[in-house]
Amino acid sequence: MENFIQQLADSFGSIQDLTGTFSVMDLTIWMLLSFLLTAFLWRVYKKTHKWTSYTQSYVHTLVLMWMTVCVIMLIVWSNIARAFSLVWALSIIRFRNAMKETRDIWFMFAAMAIWMAVWTKFYVLAIVFTVALALVVFIMNRFDWFRREATSQILKIRVNNNADFDHLFDDVFIKYTTLSDLISIDSVRGWALTELVYTVNMKNQNKKQEFLSEIKKLNDNLDVTLIIGYNSTDL
Image 1 (cartoon, rainbow, N blue to C red):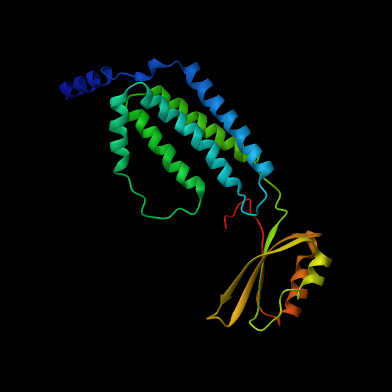
Image 2: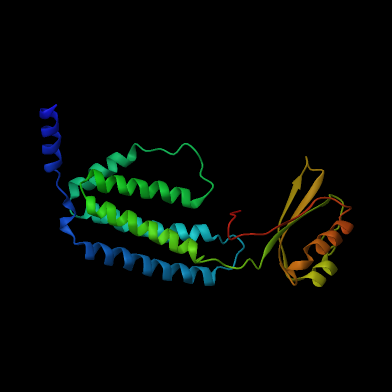
């Protein structure tokens, strides 16, 4: 038993931390600068995004992803042979399930970065990286960063195949919306019905039910769906 304890102590005593190549201040500055520059870039993305597919989760993922890539580059930068070995190690990883949430993909990627740091004996880097990312995730969620008010909604209307839908809903759109664009036409239910997909901006968000009721009067009471919440849902 005493021999085992001595061997265990010797093994811990031989642990070498390779993070000494960089100081903790260097790591902090690199990750902070990576975060600030990326956050600025994606704030520009948020302001200039004109379509309805904007999601807050996607922007969060990209900000965190570039911080993760920064750490991976620090690991491989100091040793070319290590870079090739890590590429080989990562090549055996396969994702069999499709991930619906973009942040789930980042968490998997971040976990691999932490594993890479520990495996290559960058222990301090692994700790600083994990703590920094945890703080960034909590801060972005606490202050709801990169959230954008949903001004546009997707409206799905089903009509009979013989319906003249080109101007059928014009009066309702003028009454309840500031913008309405037809973006797709598709046949559903075995070609029995036609589904129209519009992007609309409501004049008054409190009149959604009245808006849908008037649409249903015009399409023979067939299905009408208004999809909202693009900050949390990806189409």
